[in-house]
Image (cartoon, rainbow, N blue to C red; front, side, top):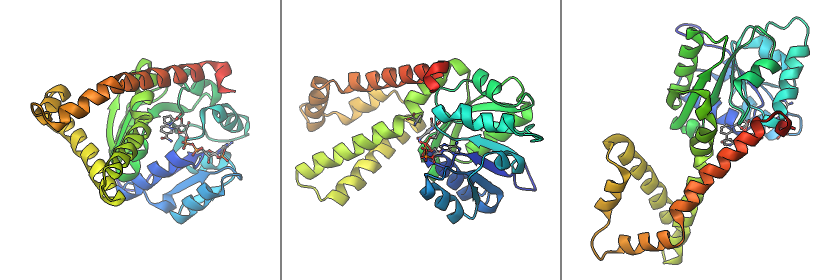
Length: 279
Ligand SMILES: NC(=O)C1=CN([C@@H]2O[C@H](COP(=O)(O)OP(=O)(O)OC[C@H]3O[C@@H](n4cnc5c(N)ncnc54)[C@H](OP(=O)(O)O)[C@@H]3O)[C@@H](O)[C@H]2O)C=CC1
Ligand SMILES: O=C(O)[C@@H]1CCC=N1
């Protein structure tokens, strides 16, 4: 991937596509002008967002494939069959491209069926912190993806955060954990700040402290590799305030709620994987 910048195309220019596009640009791996996105006419905000990046933004999917080296399938799962159907039906399109699909629940097998036979498919699960290059992504290579495709995928995803190659059976729980996870953490940050405000903190200070605390705790687990239970014990002084707070969380089923969220979200991914659930 040295030298000429890859042309990156997005089929669907929504939230996750924009996060990845902005991440690639700030990583220096791409430029607005080497990107193209197909947007839906009903989502002019996304159309404008890609134009603001200096990218080409259009309302058709086929030219995105024609003009790109790597095509990122970033429409909602329910839209994937139609969007890829457009490409399969089109005459004379060179679909011998690398397709990265980020669609929740859509399997490699389904993607390979929806796309023309020559297409090389990699299934990816990123998350929105890709925008600030702190994403957590995983990928699975399809039948026709080459070692080069895996390297290109890795290079792209590592530019916007961490990246691991996994097996497809892990994709649904990963989607539930790291794909959806930022949403759980955002409501936690909001609630922590609400608690701080309830107890008299100014709102902006409460958000700064809550977000930095989440960031710092995550970094502690990742960088020290110390078990989170041990790190929790280090915070919890005998007869102190943390023990009182933890007791309240246990009474309210905090752990159980998080475990249940991952279980429920995984089940939703599995529903979508079933062909009729993409409708
Ligand atoms: N958001 C996230 O955190 C993550 C999302 N994903 C996956 O990314 C994909 C996109 O999600 P997200 O960005 O949240 O969703 P968005 O709704 O923000 O983006 C999807 C975009 O595709 C547009 N669209 C609809 N139909 C078509 C079509 N036929 N051709 C081209 N574009 C079309 C939508 O327009 P309109 O709104 O008008 O329908 C919308 O702009 C999903 O498959 C999701 O599972 C994966 C990981 C994380
Ligand atoms: O909510 C969703 O379905 C997508 C998948 C992971 C994050 N957002």
